[in-house]
Length: 305
Ligand code: CP
Ligand code: NVA
Image (tube, rainbow, N blue to C red):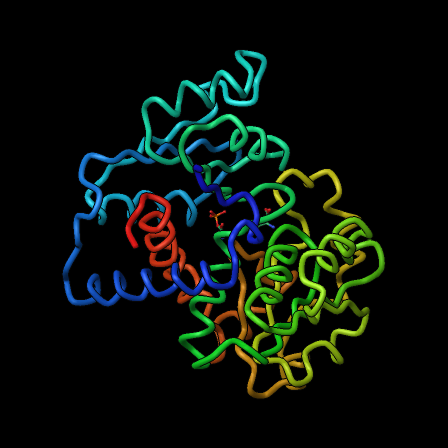
């Protein structure tokens, strides 16, 4: 059966640990100057409906390091347009490539692609989730802190795609997740019910109190208040989320916490320069971890055990 990564929960905790171990091994070899060509001649297709720096560049670099190549397929290939249906696009593309990364506007689009593709489909961000980001974040956090189980990650701001994937990933690895957001920006009932069913033991909390959320946290995470596709709501979102900025005053309530952000950041909005450039910020390490984690993920999906 072809395995996909449409959402974090497509992986078990054990599989996440396996992927982390492969990624750590390949990262150590890379650091020693060794780019093990595990997959010569293999091709990764990147089907993107939205802008990207990190996801695109890190996957392309990862595939090159593994001895393979990438095809970037942007708007001119007509994906999810009136040119042809997703089923035809996915079945045809599966004949040319060994795996597909898809960044879609609607989550249903990446799910539909996975349903028809004959090769692994990896969600490279949708409006609902960003599983590669969350997995890379926990991969780098584990290295920084030395463990994951028992830690608390506080997400301050919009309960968006990145927050949802982090909530599930934290639950899977035994971390507590707390979302601090105003009402209207917290998770919806369907997602809450999904998490309760999927991970009944998970400590997944929501609050309007950012100070309470960050107190005792190992990491404080934020993301933009207006995600791609929400630009028309920008004025309202900026106003409603203004009290949830991660700034020096908030970070004083958690003196041992690291600061995390998936990037790109809107400096001066969800985070101040002082915090994102400060000594406790690991945002560049997070971006670097995207490549290493995804190398482990590709190797695992393509059959390296
Ligand atoms: N964090 C992240 O996914 O960045 P890009 O949108 O640049 O890929
Ligand atoms: N929430 C952001 C994440 C970008 C990596 C967005 O969807 O635009």
